[in-house]
Amino acid sequence: MRVISVIAFVLLVMGACKSQKKNADMDSSETQQPGELTMVMSDLYGGTEGEEVQVLRSQGALDKFFININKTRKPGLKPPVIDFNENMVIVYCSGQTNNQSLPALWLTEDPEQGMVVQKKQKNEAKDEESTAIVRPFGLYIMPLTEKEIKLQSNPR
Image (cartoon, rainbow, N blue to C red):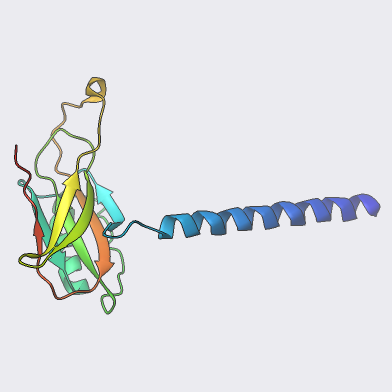
């Protein structure tokens, strides 16, 4: 009987430790730098041929975007459910490329242009560069705003 009590106590303590760790992980993932966009999902296939940013302010517009993505997929990707009363979706398509990762995105506010999406390409090792042609896209959420959102084109 005493052995069962000890085992039950150990299992209880282990379960409590895991739940505290899970809460700490959730807290750190929810804190973000000012201006950073929160990525909801991304994929290597389904984006547009050229680089662009789309702003979606309704579930219907998001569903329409996923209809286009899913034209060549079986089974298709399921659109995420977003609370469009508080948030909006930024879709970033990097265009046709052989780069397997999306750049990090963040927002800045420009009094003349509204909101500007800026990007910073992640450093990748040249040894791992793929020859496959992909059209990646990323879905990001941000608080709802009526300001115009533009992609800042980087000078080359």
